Structure formats: C-alpha cells, structure tokens
Image (cartoon, rainbow, N blue to C red):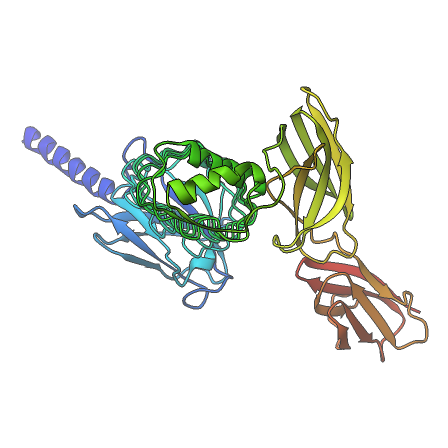
Length: 516
C-alpha cells in the first residue's frame, strides 16, 4: 500500500512538472528572451491598447510564450502565441502605456513588422536573446522610431535574408556592436538600410561572401560613410542603386572584385562620392585584370579627376563599359595623405563645438567646416589651418554659433584641403539640438498698461499658452503673425505673474511674464 502511495505521489509530481514546463514556469537553462519596448501613445492599431506584428514560428510546431509589463512597472500579463501563427495581436494593454514585451526563444524564429500598422510603436530592442532566427526579411521595415540598446548579438547563423531589415528606420544608429554580427549565411541584403537616415555604424568587417543582392542597400542612407572597401562582393549579381542618394558616402571601392554581369545601374547616382574616392575606385577596377567587361555603371553627378582619365577610358573602351557620371573635374583628385581619426560635434549653449583629430598629415593646407540643416545642401561656416606635415596626434576645434539656425538637427562635414588644392570630404555627422537651446523672447515684460504681448522664437511656433500661478490655462486670444512669431491678447487679466508656454518642433520652453 505504501509503495503504491509513493508511486502515486511520484506520478503526480511528474505531471505537475510537465505542466509547469509547458507553461514556461520552468524555462530551459541558458535561454534568454527577445525584449522590445512599445509606445502605445503613437499611431497604431486599436484604441491605443494593443500591439500587432508578424511572426514566424518553428515549422515543427509548438507555441511561444510571452510576457509584458508596463514601464514604469505597474501592470503586467502573459500569454501564448499559437503554433504556426503568422500574426500576433496582444490586446487588453493599459491605454497609452509603454510596454516592455519579452518573447521566449523556444519555437520563436522571426519577427516581421514589414510596414505593419503598429510600426511606429516599436521604440527599442533592449535584448536579442537566444532566439534562433531564421530570417530578418522586412523585420523592422518602417519602424521610424526604433532604437537598439541591446548589448548582446543576435544569432544569425541560419539567416539568409536581411532585405528591408532596417528600411525606413530613420532614427536608428545602432547597435554599436553591429559590426560584430555573423552575416556569413546572408545572401540577400537588398534595401537593408534604405532610408535609414541616421545610420552610420562601422560594418566594414562583415562577411559578405555569400551575398548575391545589394541593390538599394544604402539608398537614401544620408549620413552613412563607413569603409566597406574590404567587403567580398564576388558573388553579388546586383548593386542597382546601392548607394543612390547616400549623400555622405565617399569611400574607395577599388579593391572590389566584381562578378561578371553584375548590375551597377545607378550605383553611385547622386551619392556623396567625392572626386578622390570615385577616381580611386575607377583606377582600382581598371587595374584589376579580373574586372568583367560590358558593365553599365551609374554615377550621375559624380566627377572623376584627371588622374583617373586613363582608367575610365580603359573601362569604357577595353572593357566596353557604359559609364554615366558627372564627367572630369579638370583637376587631379587623389585621396589626401591626411588620416582623420575622429570628427564629432557637441552642443554648448547656443553653439556647436566641432572637434576633429588627425594622426598623419603630409602637405595639408587647411580644413573647411560645412554645415547643413537638411543633410543635402552644405555651406562653409569656418576654416582652420592644418599643421601641414605631422605624424603626431593633432586636435582641431571650431565653434559654430547657431543663433538663427532653426533646424532641430544640424549636419556637419569636414573638407580637408591639401597644399595643391586637392581636397577630401569627410563623413557627415549630426548634432541633435536640445529642446531649450533655441531663442525665445516674450515682450514687453513686464506688461504695463498695454494689452498685447509678442512671443518670438527662432523656430516655428506650435502651441502658445498662458497659465496663472495656480496652473490654470487662461482663455486668451493668440494671433499668429508668422512662423516664429505670435501675439497674445492680455485683455481682462489682472496684475500678477503668469507662465507663457511655447512649443516648437524642438520642444517646449516656458517663460515668466509679469503683469503690472
């Protein structure tokens, strides 16, 4: 009898363990979740109380567990993604909350936002976890608010498609360890960073030996300018529009071994390819005996130097290439013997402080700093003389007064000019200005017997409101005069102190107003 009782208890415990393991109360050792953060105040599905996204699960079947919690902590919940599901909708979330979603890696294989309804709500990936990903195709396509703070590295060993992965991720510039990703199995990188306007991480050591498509890969990636000249591209069949409208990109790709018949149409069209780098690329391809014949290269608006004339002729005559570019610059364009090791910008009050360092200079004349408010058109805003000839670390700085500059983000690039007049343009860097860094004037202040108060800012005005010292919003008439100016009718207000709140695209600033 006692023996049967013990067997019963053992069987009961075993059954409970199986149930707990299935419900994720017991998690496989060594596994970690895929963790994302979602902002339900942003436009999306439902009434700001749900999340919808595409998934791929293990083909062998099996459900996937998930849990969620609000940030900051308050509410939480959990659920299960049914086996073989392709779409997930998590409902009943607190309205307008920020949600941290953790997805168990077991049986989970892919996420696919792909311009989905809730693409704007995904704001961060904080952990990749131990998910055995099988595709990254269109994973985060259209997630224009996405950032990645994850410090771990995704398991991409079984991923052969990363096309459209970060397409349209306009604020993404990370993760910082993306250069360490295992890309050896990927064959399709088409449009991977297309329109990723802030991305500029070093991915020059990626294994691209298996890649066959790089078309549109960096199209519209306006600040990307990393050295990818060491990539293996011998299997790539199309680079159509690969760097089109990549305004900052200017690198020597002359060491690339091109595949016979590879499509180069529009490859450099309207890109940032400067004369020295484009010239070096043409020279490198012309000197390579393995460079295939009968290719068509697009480099609209890009000029080559007189030092590359023979190389270009070799490609167009001996190799029968068709090249559409900006023609000859009429001067020699060689990559300058200046090694730029850093270039950055920081905000200091109403100024931007530009700082750059070089480790080698031979015959350098000076540096010209150029600024843009749209990352497209640049103007010279300063000049700094170079040391000239040096093998030491040299540091240069320039302060740029931003009064009158209205853009919330300011773009800079550095033009290194040699003693013979040749030059090289650096990558573009971006300075995102703080919310309180712009000018706001409220006058007259104090307000005497007058009725009208003028609000003026060096940014387009949004909401203008006046509050009393009890925090009550005053029902006052506000008349807009122009984009950065408005007039407040203070009629009917009594003597005392008021708070004027002004919102622009850069943020909100408040100023005290005294009524005599």
